[in-house]
Image (cartoon, rainbow, N blue to C red):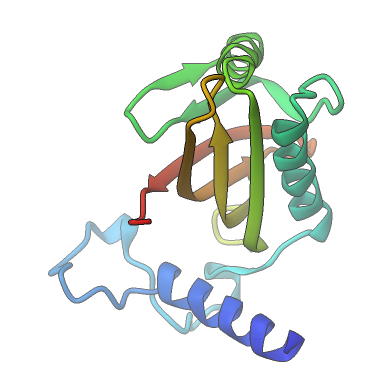
Length: 171
């Protein structure tokens, strides 16, 4: 079962980051990704496992409403949220997260896959994570959504950016 999970996660990662989307006719030269890369330093490889662990801990902090448990964000962190809102700066992000999470009675996350990626050609480290979040509102209403996030890290190991996508599925 573990081998199947690892194989499917790897395959999903290759599909997401490869140039195999039929709808895309052409990309600007700087955005083209050749797969498999002729030069191994130009493509994505498995990154630092510690970064994936950090993001999993951040998801747990969200569920527990414990944002002061870890200090993983750079002062200049930028979060790109699915509704188009962009939040810049560590303090603004922590304040916004505490305010929104504080408005929920509870949150429960389930992680489907999490992978740390390294792109030596661009000298960047990232973590991609897929999961589901079940939020309970103060009135008892439950809202479920699928999540995909990509988190980027600087050379000091601090989070510099996060981009989040959500999806709502039928009950």
